[in-house]
Length: 360
Image 1: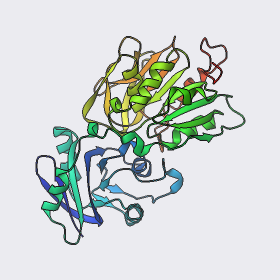
Image 2 (image 1 turned 180 degrees about the vertical axis):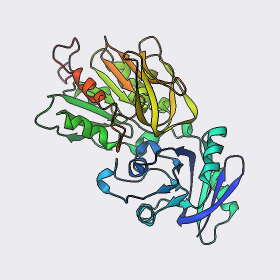
Image 3 (image 1 turned 60 degrees about the vertical axis):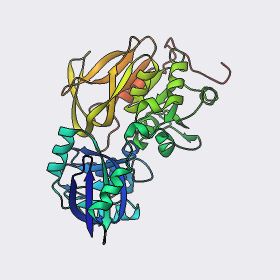
Image 4 (image 1 turned 180 degrees about the horizontal axis):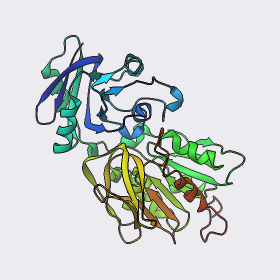
């Protein structure tokens, strides 16, 4: 099959078509060389076209137990070489896919010009103009104002924790949550109630909440207004935690600001320095926005070694802890899994904060 990728600015790249279709999205790349199943099912890639910089994708097959959600989220997939097993999976998911192009050039274009709009067409009779037509209809990520509804649960879900762990109740606001976040909390004994991204204050108050947890997710944090309002309301009343988009939302709610990055952090080898311990951990990341200024409420406790962007925000007095990276990453690295222990430590009855209940 023929395939064309039209890049913002008008340049068109020819490729081999693997799964037919036409689509558009923000073209981004990940440096991850393992974990392609995790990446492809990560809701944070919604409305994006994912390019793998590693040359061979699919060399250890496809297993459903590695998925982070119930579907593939990127609008299309680009790689130097896709194995037949991955192609079959993407075909089942109706996700256009292309390979046999120089992804080194593509990644260099993104690094130099930033994440960019693109249009992709795959099929027997497609043309370069078809790809350019798709490009013309592509929106910027901040223009996807309802993206939260595309990735969030529609109704609350309850996930029971292990019997031999911490007795705690976590309310997770689903802005595009990876399944491993729920698993990491359940494994430690916490019950997790997953609520839609637009849950109200009254919705949260109907649960016996020990921790309010804001999940990862796609797009511009400024578009998650309902979640920002939740953080603003409950800060200082109930412990707060957040991952990735969750960190940005917490910062937005508490006087900080966020901004779009040139090409973001997407990969499994991002070094993060902890200010308090003076130690570096390796992390998995997937985000195109970052906290610009944390405001006066939050302290930057971790930063990215490569570009100094905030990777951890804390307020010990208010029981707030957030991370920009993914401690729950599968297949790793697992340097920062203790984040979930720190989150659940805030539920200790000896803490100065108390749980929010419907009777409050």
